[in-house]
Image (cartoon, rainbow, N blue to C red):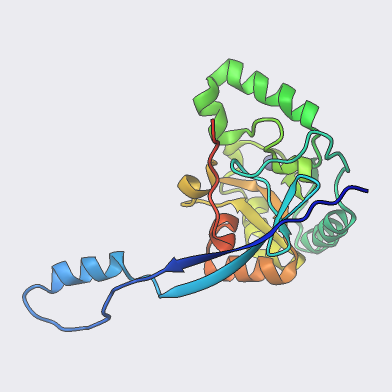
Length: 224
Ligand SMILES: [Zn+2]
């Protein structure tokens, strides 16, 4: 079996030059605004990137977004741990009288190609890119993503979506395209689209209120 492995380290430095003074004088308003803008804690984090058979793993997490694609033949269905975690979560939700079903799990390269083509024909490429992935760039092809109970913007604010947001990290999932992170993930807010990353990662990402791109220090942008 061919196995190509490239390891590199990238260091991301987020330096903030903010002084957290709390002086109160005439220029307080201006100072406060400026402080809020730059109130990012100094953070230096090294990430490891590994490419195995055309699939990118950052810090051991498989990544697929607008920057990182999957090979055409990456075609393994929903992973066992994703399915197991979902079923466990589904049981817990049922105890709270919430019904969770898989509306869409694994999608092959070819299926995504058809889907994206339809959306692009109907809405134009630019708009389609905000809610549908091009073939090879869909997280659904990874077998780690699930659309729960549908994929419709009218679902925003529904009880099942609220339950999902509150509890999915307990089972190793994150809301992959959160509200307020659209410019980073490259996608509209989708409360129904969850991604399996394992419990520890999910809890950390949720606690920090960040998206996967921020967690791994990467972008999500098409090259063409
Ligand atoms: Zn989805």
